[in-house]
Length: 243
Ligand SMILES: [Zn+2]
Image 1: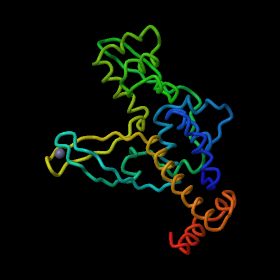
Image 2 (image 1 turned 120 degrees about the horizontal axis):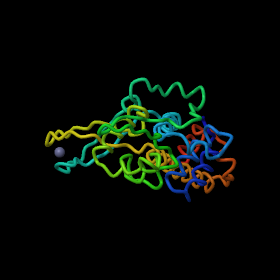
Image 3 (image 1 turned 60 degrees about the vertical axis):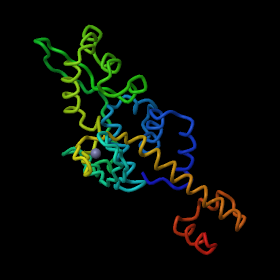
Image 4 (image 1 turned 90 degrees about the vertical axis):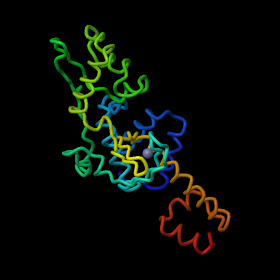
């Protein structure tokens, strides 16, 4: 799971031209290569986010610092939380060290609504590019069998389906509870863990390229040899240069 600086930089460059949904699959495939390239796309949204959260912890640590505007009074709030705080009970990131927890089959949900039985599969990563949020009509229609697709038009049913979905795939929506000390408002902030990881990777890549630039200018070393240095050695050389 720990990639060397050169591989991680290459991964960032490869993903730069992709949209977020494809970037997520690229990150997962690089960490846990599956035989069929699109197998990751068939995993549920929660499984995908669980693995991305694990990668975030491995590469950039388990701490999160966020600045959020209070939706009620617009006060800017700074908050810090850890990966454990956003993981539902029973979902242990450490289990992933053994390898990807890939589920080969669709995860099915079922329930009763207005006396009618319904069933659908849990949304998968491949469903998301066309959808906005897990309660989107288009997303739910894609997951329902055709004869039940009309259910997605009903707001009440969507709320029930959302509940069943989060029970079956708890990390499909990751959020953190926030409280505004200025006005007392409390709310849940959703976290798009894939976007978060990508932002961290981009920040890391920019900082690393800045280091390469400074060391190459000072010593005339190639990018390849600078990336082959450990982070500690790069930092020491930069310190000697007064950077
Ligand atoms: Zn407030």
